[in-house]
Image (cartoon, rainbow, N blue to C red; front, side):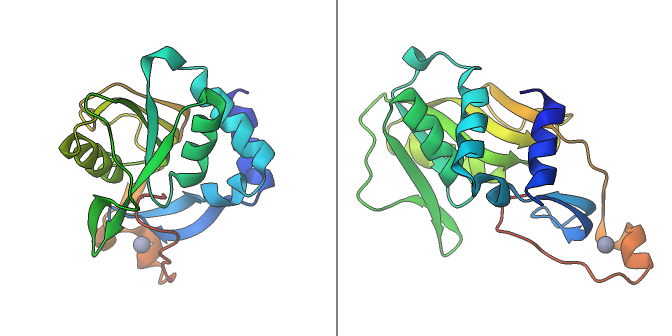
Length: 192
Ligand code: ZN
């Protein structure tokens, strides 16, 4: 699939939203991608995971990890296609943790999978938890990169299937706020 076909998949699922949104970074934007609506259809999840695994060599990884909640569906599907174990990190009282009895054998090479990256905060917190547990995160894969021109977000290579350059505004410099349009805060942290 090319980028246009993937954007059409988002549009068909009603997942490309236009309005006035507050992103996890606190900045405001007129567009928002809700990957959960696309991933409702398991065929979409399989197709997108297939695009992601085309970018990697399965032999380079032992395990797949995702930060909950945004990365869960796509991470599980990537792991299924690669036939690797899948674990996830999650926030408890705001702090990313490895829970549910998951453990990471020493020197395990992990592929980190997320739905949408912007600042990369959730992915970095996930990788920090993996390292604390003795694992070695070696690459990041995400469906959408909302900030493709940013540098230095991750200390490992990363790849995405869609780059979505969307203008964002500080709250006190937002034209939609100036118009008096109410802003909404969709999804969870890390999902925009
Ligand atoms: Zn605004």
